[in-house]
Length: 383
Ligand code: TRH
Image 1 (cartoon, rainbow, N blue to C red):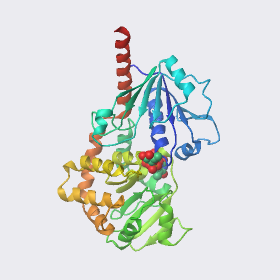
Image 2 (cartoon, rainbow, N blue to C red; image 1 turned 90 degrees about the horizontal axis):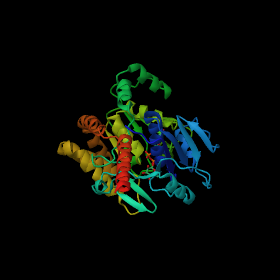
Image 3 (cartoon, rainbow, N blue to C red; image 1 turned 90 degrees about the vertical axis):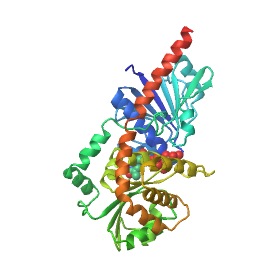
Image 4 (spheres, rainbow, N blue to C red; image 1 turned 135 degrees about the vertical axis):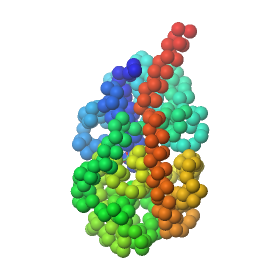
């Protein structure tokens, strides 16, 4: 395949870690799997350094994992644009840089947010004229008519190796200060925004029949956890049948291990939700809430896709619990119990779903599209 030689990815961090999470993942993949020279421009180095702790948040320019990471400051007059320019999630490129893109004849891609809604197929790859340039929409998604999802070439093999290797698993549990939990303990990772259903969920785990080990990476849900246990100092809590441990926020490449090691994963936003799908375990998605409530449509669109092959009971249990966890009506304890009872079927579904999605990967689709744009341009020039 003919490859773009250089690529600039621009990331404006709005809040949380999703924007930089996706941009950083794509940057690494283009650089390390496709040999592209990648510069990642980010306007918030501190957020980047959370995902990549060996980065120095005080530097304006540094190399990390084969990528040149640059602070997106104000002055762009001396920067020569790359041949491929990606603005993540519609961020606005500097004016002088855009003018220089025209000279370089850069290909300009707007990488959009992920959604399972059906309008996505119609908008994927659409050109948006910005004379003298054209900006193309590129939508991640769940069907062949979308850009697919970010998936590293070796991720599923690494996951399977981890799941089949007790030594690797032991290493993971030791890294969080534990021995391998017993087989009948339900292991759960909990990455979430603030959530009104948390108290009811913790009650259900405390009073439930099965032992639950819940691992909570540091973040927005933590104050509620601390309040529940009325203890601000602890990192490990135990009550009834629940043991809960607070974990440090780990570097992005290590977050997958947490998902692989657990039986059920609570995820949020966009990137962790995709990673949970690659983990092949039942998961619960707390969607990023939007002011106009459109996130409900997004959530339902995903559920409608995912549920197609589930029995009516399992589909009902999954939909019920996901809605409650996202602030919808319903009894928290009952909704959780129904979801947990459907776990056997959800487990099988998660594995098949991940395998199906893995046939449609974003980086490959993106590079194919760049070639397509090149052909369209050549035709226009010849015509
Ligand atoms: O942080 P988020 O809530 O990001 C959100 C969404 O992307 C949302 O769509 C967007 O509009 C908003 O940000 C601005 O959730 P997300 O997308 O899962 O990103 C979290 C990233 O953090 C992801 O790349 C995984 C990573 N991560 C770690 O690297 N280490 C950790 O310990 C954990 C828990 C997560």
